[in-house]
Length: 236
Image 1 (tube, rainbow, N blue to C red):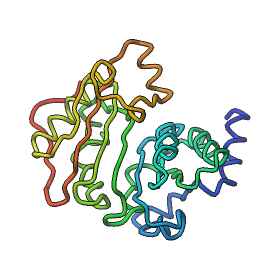
Image 2 (cartoon, rainbow, N blue to C red):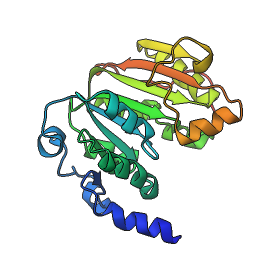
Image 3 (spheres, one colour):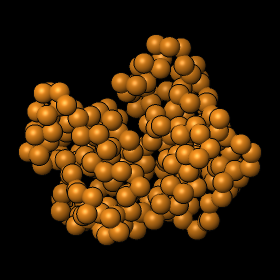
Image 4 (cartoon, rainbow, N blue to C red):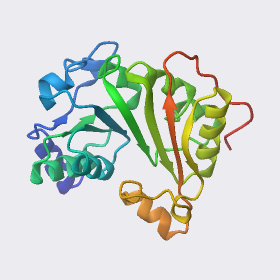
């Protein structure tokens, strides 16, 4: 492991805005701050927004700077990446930002019923193989997880360069009659871009430099439905 990475891991332990639970703290149990993010960390009753697979936290930071009346939590498993977002938040004195190092599979250990109002999923691993499709962050499995802590009809945003993941997610939404608010398979060539959608992550900049189109879906997630997988084969 490189010296810089070791230094970042050491500094991560000093960041009050970065939560790094152990495996034993979340396996089949609730983390201590579940249902208490507003009371114990943010010290307000503002809505909570998550960024899943946040990487270096570009979206988490940009959203927190624009929407001071909301709280933002970036989630990723890579500590070296989270260092950048947590460090930026501290440097800019952003009190409405936190970061959480964990696997998305454990997300229900951290958030309680109606504790979150919105989710951003920015350039996730598309999990192209059939045997890994259930790991997609927009699969029926994960949407069911999100129902456990999102408010009814809470908003989910998906931004991806992967056409197959976009088509799969769109088909899943249609299969379950889930309301789509925004739908485009070429974000920057249509009139959907605003000052938030135009935020470009490290990976997005790479995709655009290779002339990849960017897909975007924004939809509501109701609590009172059993989510089913779409018809057809959406894998390689």
